[in-house]
Image 1 (cartoon, rainbow, N blue to C red):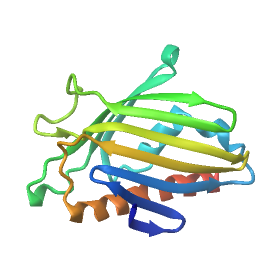
Image 2 (cartoon, helix red, strand yellow):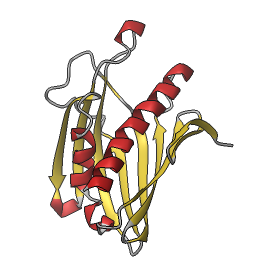
Image 3 (spheres, rainbow, N blue to C red):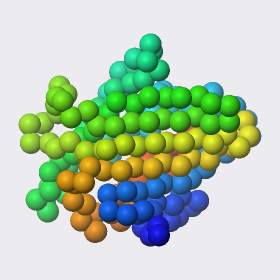
Length: 180
C-alpha cells in the first residue's frame, strides 16, 4: 500500500515500497495546447527553472531514436550529513500515443560524464516512467513512477526532503505553464 510522503497544492509524492516512488500532479492552461509542449524541451526547462537545486544540466537529443541523454548535477545538499553529492545521467525516450505521451528513462552506468565532480555519485535509477495523460488539449495529468536500484539506501528523513524539493520543481514548471 502506498504511503503519502508529501502532499500539497494538487501534488502528491508517494512511497510504493522500498526504492519505489510515485509522483502525481496535473497542469492546466485554457490558452495553450499543452500536448505540443510535452517534449524534451520541457524536460530541459524543468531543470533551467530550478537553478537553486541543480548546479548544471545538459540535454543531448538523439532525434533518430526519439531519445535524449540527460545529465544533471544537483547541489550538494547533504554535505554536512556526510552524504555524497548526486548526479543523474539518464537515457530517456519519448513515445507519443493517441491520448498519452510517455517518457521512459534509466541511468547510464558506463561512464561518468564530463563536468561531474570526481566524488559525486550517480543517482542509480533502475527505471522512471513519466506518463502524461491528455485529458483535454488544455489539461494533462502527470504520473511519474521512479524505481531506484536496490543498492541505493534512502534515509527516511531524506524522503520528505526529496518530496519537498520535487514539489518545488514541479510547482515552478506548473506556474510557468499557467502564466505562459
